[in-house]
Image 1: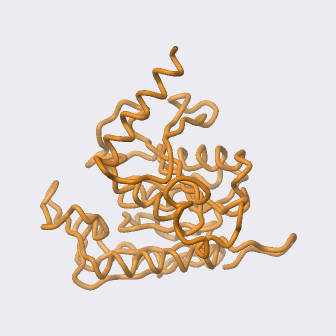
Image 2 (image 1 turned 45 degrees about the vertical axis):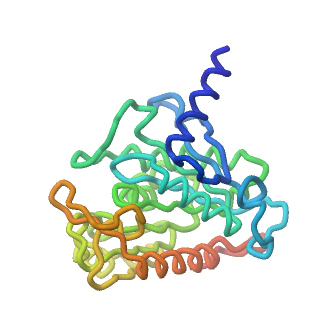
Length: 284
């Protein structure tokens, strides 16, 4: 009875996230958190290329046939999981990736983290990595992490050698971060990293990202930085038309930047999650 109720509740939450009439490629799932971390279980939206909406798309976009597939862990911004992040997961699945958009707030009973931050998401990313690695349709050697805003900071924290990455033997193959707070002086990344940010971003000043890239340690994986002139925070969130001011920062969708960032994201994933021969190092 309890399991049935939980599944029904998850279905209601999924419908509220996606909105009426929105097709989806995946389902909501629960998975174990890391030992000695709370809560005991986390939840997320799981989309896979061989099921749902993605399975109906052109098969040419999925080069792995029936899998196992490469995967991407998706980390949300400070307001939590929304239809935007389910949409990212669905898009990734249409490109041939298993995607797990992690909800780091709901299971903790938190409505938002705006203005307060928190590093739980970086560790939630590793809980998601372990969960994905146990699925028979996922290739555990080809998992990336993608985060936006607060989730972008968490993704950087997850792959920075002296931060969360020092506590885990597992490694992400790549990291993609949209408009993060680049607060990591002398960064040393354990995975190739792509940063996508607007020049006019008030919430995450681009100069901090430029400084982080300029002072990155030579022992780390490469960090690529793409800056969009005149573009603001949340530039890929289509609902932000017109833009709004929130907590003193201007947030606004920019279609050209969003499309270019999606193309860069797809190319970066293709380059770094490519299947390698046994013993061959991943691309850098």
